[in-house]
Amino acid sequence: MRRILPVALFACLTARADDGIYRDAGASAFQFLKVEVSARAAALGGTVLLNSGPLSGMSCPSGLAGVDGLTLTACHAGYLGSATQNAAALTWGGGRFRFSAGISTISAGGLEYRGDVPTSEPLGTFDYLDLAVSGAAAVRLGAVDAGLGAKIIHEEIWDTDDWGMAVDASAAFHPTGWLDIALAVQNVGPSVDFGERPGYRMPMTWRTGARVTPVLPLAGPVSVSAEMCKPIDNEVSGGAGVELNPVGWLDLRTGYRFGSDSQDLTAGLGLSYGGWALDYAWIPGALSLGDVHRIVLTTRL
Image (cartoon, rainbow, N blue to C red; front, top):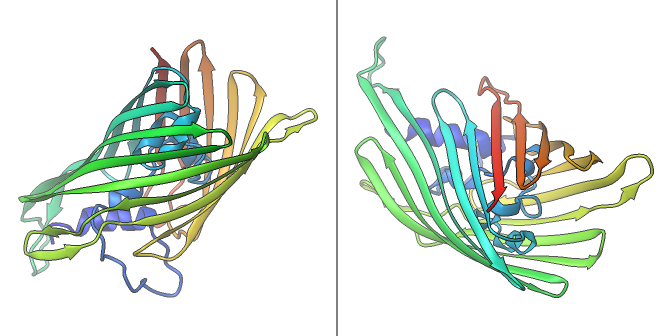
């Protein structure tokens, strides 16, 4: 009972429900690791592989290779009820190598619980906290970027908690100046136990995607991204997005998520001035889940 609300929330945010429940649904722990952190990636249909920028170290570390200098990034997003996501990352490096350290949390408080017998009033309330502390490195080898990341994970739900660890590995290929191709395996790690229930696997996920960036007459630079992912506990899903850069300080973004009953259209924008960048994403929610508003602020130090 204690895990029902948090697990149900993120199952709805990340799951596909076509003809029924997937055979391995609920078999993996730490579902919050499937939720993207980057506002740019979220606005572009959840295409995280090539669009996460300085937040790449939390899920697709090869993306760090394209981040220059010392940067500090902070993220905030609100979900159903009192659930919020917060994250921060520091990136640095030069030459062929880039590094990142980050922390991300999803938490909520005052969640009502009831016993096995339905009651009009709750028996009480409880809180939950999901936490991941990550470190990552990336290297640029000509037309290929490679990255490896590791994270320590902690989850607390009422009086039950557990720790875990996982690694992410990704690579990006740049065969031409207008084409990028990437692939990743995320959240690879040993199984964990929750209370008296052993054997929850990590939510290992495979991803592959591509991005084309032509320069069109009148429209200027355009970025078109597409991505597919396959977690071990659900069907294949994906997303696509388009980003326009009508003027140097403004990016306009929209996208679509495929294979999700809870989210489809996405939108957002990016603003930049001097050494600062602000990214915003709006993800409308179905099934009475409400909309998600994600804000990311980045500064060069």
